[in-house]
Image (cartoon, rainbow, N blue to C red; front, side, top):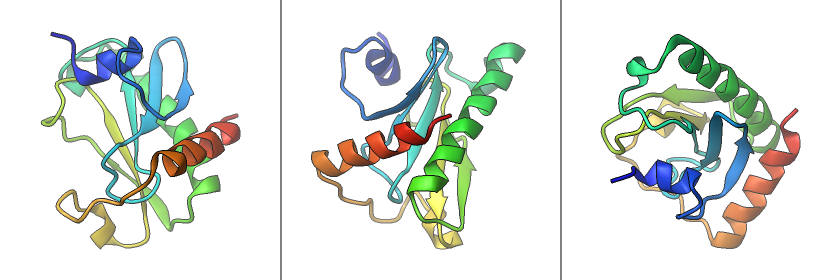
Length: 131
């Protein structure tokens, strides 16, 4: 069965997309650790990040940098933290998490509650800053 991320890529599940190319997709996490928490994925379904071919692996991180550059223009933060955990969804992905302090970088913390309108507005604002 296709991963939830592949279902998003295929349009079977909606997502608040912030950037997309023919190989990569970035969208807001539905259970954000902080406001602006974004997931960056290759469209190709590969479970482990380190199993990606070199071109896709490098491209994914370059794409994540573009997304991060736009994210910091919209979400006030000291910096954007990067995490690769890979246990929750069997599809390689990078978490981009806007941070004010180290305590913001905890997946155990209470998630940020956003309405659909807030998610939509934030995704649009970040997408507008993609260069």
